[in-house]
Image (cartoon, rainbow, N blue to C red; front, top):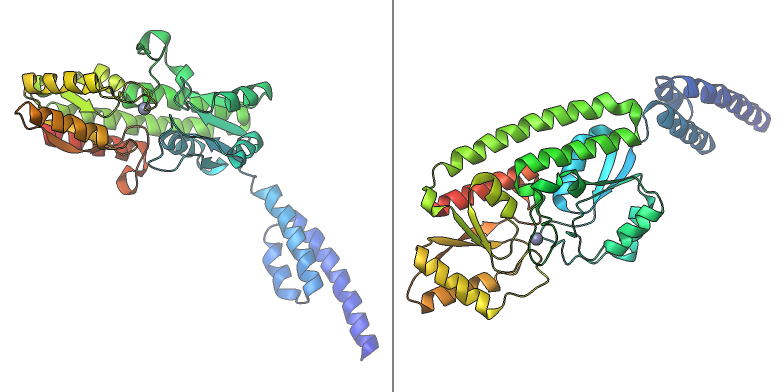
Length: 334
Ligand SMILES: [Zn+2]
């Protein structure tokens, strides 16, 4: 029995070797090999062989890290099956204030490509970005894709980072990410280009939807008052007078004089509604509502807008988020 068992074992080992070689050559052999080999040692051989076969046949996915939730969505759409995208920031997180952890820095350093907004949106990450640059990391910085004359500047910040609230800008961001993907993997150029073309079509449809909905709001009522200045590109692109309580970044607190001034503007222009933002505390907008009330006028809180972060459900994507925002804005102001 012992001898037979040894012989069988030797035979099986032989078989395993041949199978292992076959597995390297064809994927279909994997299944057959699995059926024939039962014993643990051989299963291990098979696993190892399968790993090799998998890496040879199914290409490895590039590891991509993105900062904001909008960029994570964009990187996933253009990269498709070729990439595995992870975002640093979760839904509802304020990118101006986000402090990268040691783990985040490691993930960024180990990624094949990094997607960032820049223009100081990621206000606490400047040093981390400099380190990536020194290390020659492949970085898609979408802020750089907006021509200088299209960038809005303000007192506190040389350039307004909230570029995504103009669909035209977002198409440029998508182009930037596509070009950087092509640098990462030239052989997948057509794949990325196809994803880009498909996405641009969807963005054009989104843009048409936004314009259609805004047309329902009387021109005099196209005033958007929110917690911070995230919607200036929106105002520029779609003809809204936009006023934020906190300035470009949420780092600065709204001064009581700003609240009083804006309250005066609301009363004077009989603004129907003001809006809170999902990634900014509601208290400043509520204080504004109170200040308006003190002047003998009632302004409603028209709803919650996504500003610097995507949400959940339908708002998990850039397109879904923008549609929800438009529905809230138009619903409250028309
Ligand atoms: Zn912001």
